[in-house]
Length: 288
Image (cartoon, rainbow, N blue to C red; front, side):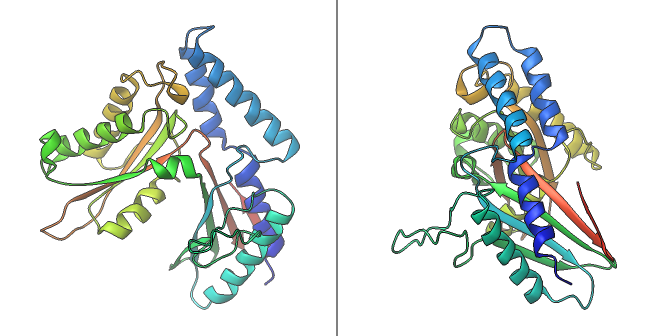
């Protein structure tokens, strides 16, 4: 089944059409800021940009980021073919200017020009029990990626132990250290446990959750709400200009770990939380 054009459309939507829940959160943030303030001005500009990008199918941010694909496929579907088709679609989406050429060789500094390179884009494949294909795409910008961080508990500088209070302390520290450099207001995807590498993979998975959802684990739901409230009380504000909205959401998942290790991995996402999902059932392709 040739899905190249469908994948191009997935990329177009992710790059140019901000999800409804994210835009709604930005509008709510604007309503909380004082008229005439730098925070209000920043959010006005952001919302104007969101509308223009959607209307003209142009990137919502000049940094279109690293394309990260989470692919959930049924038994018997070739991951090699899927990867090849997604790569073709990525190159085509770049040619159509939905994506900026971002793949740079770490040794030579040369840009490949089509967003294809060694380990670029990023792929995570998982075979599941369903009989349909689901592909999730996250476009992760460089500014937000640079302020992502990982803590190892216990963390002596903050007197953070191996409990949810320790988790709370290091996550708030991550927000404080980021200041406005991650293009606030941001969304935090957090993974408790796992190993160093997969901690970030799982943290980014959390970014696919809707901003207004509720964690099914009561302790984590309470922690998410508290961190969202306390993060916004830091006063960092949109783009670091000060204000009442530093975070749009906090999403936390807990994973098993080694007894000797307790990592808290924080994937910071900028206000341009660009994520879309494509589902293929037979000949039907849908997006959300």
